[in-house]
Image (tube, rainbow, N blue to C red; front, side, top):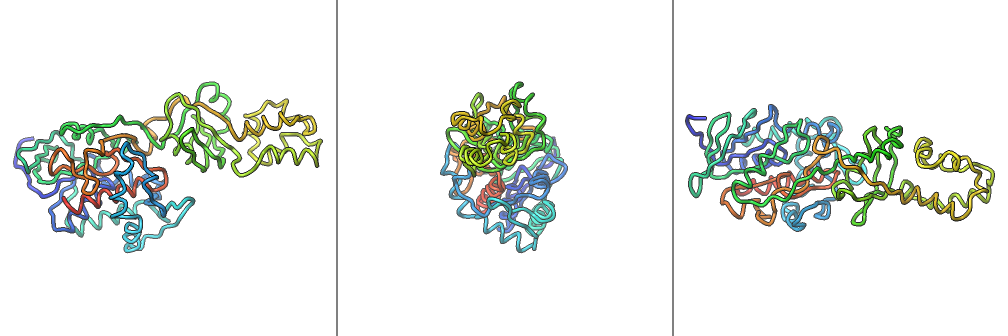
Length: 397
């Protein structure tokens, strides 16, 4: 697009959680900041997150809650802008929130409260946000200046921040733009994959389990490398729920996962005890006291469920317990970016400053948030990474 080039100090591509946080901090320092976003609304992912309630951080944040080829990279940012710093900001705006299981913090009312807070902070810092702005191309005209050509005009800046996110949830305007810009300036990109995503099932498992749609059970779900203790949810397409979303980020195609449907009891001992006091009751009666009847019926043959406990051998009791506590299932795949909450992989953190988020290859170029090879667990960790990485870049751009 021809015409006059508008000059600014800091140009941020992406009105995302990290982009808005960076804009606020840079604006507070007196820098002139312009944010460009191709969506028609700022912070779209914030609005839809946490079922519309925004799980904005977690009470317990640690580098171990993140996945990266460089597991140490996130430590600096997370220690310099902590969950307590963001909670303090939320408290300043008197946004009501509550804590759920495993330290997750959610808004009482709406995710809009968090977005409104960020936009109010942007306004106070004189940040200009231009929406419906498609990026056409980027040039670095000299050692110090970037020129960005967009549908909203041409812009020049000494600091260019890429906060354009990953590939998850394309209906929220996700795009590979950040990776393309990184590649343009010589950065290595680790292969990207959907993370925090439901599993689809092999046809034979789907036929057997799709009738369980809507059932939720507290479980241990794991593979050889890690396990999570949270709920799983049976859907008409496969398996979802917090524990499944968590393990999906550590799953490799073709791999089995192991599900313990009753992690808090010794199933074999429970059946054996009941056998000694109520030998004539049926196995299905005991198991249906522990798990939903439809789930029990899907896992065992009706003939075996109808047997009285006195007919069960020790080996048979062990096999029954194993079926419930070491249930192995091989997912067919995942639902992909369409429903994934995050993107695994991304820009190689070894080529970025962990203190400032600046490229080690190009002076004045910064990458923050999900576009980097940092992926948090479910539970507010990805938002905390956005706040922390955005804050760090905002101190220096």
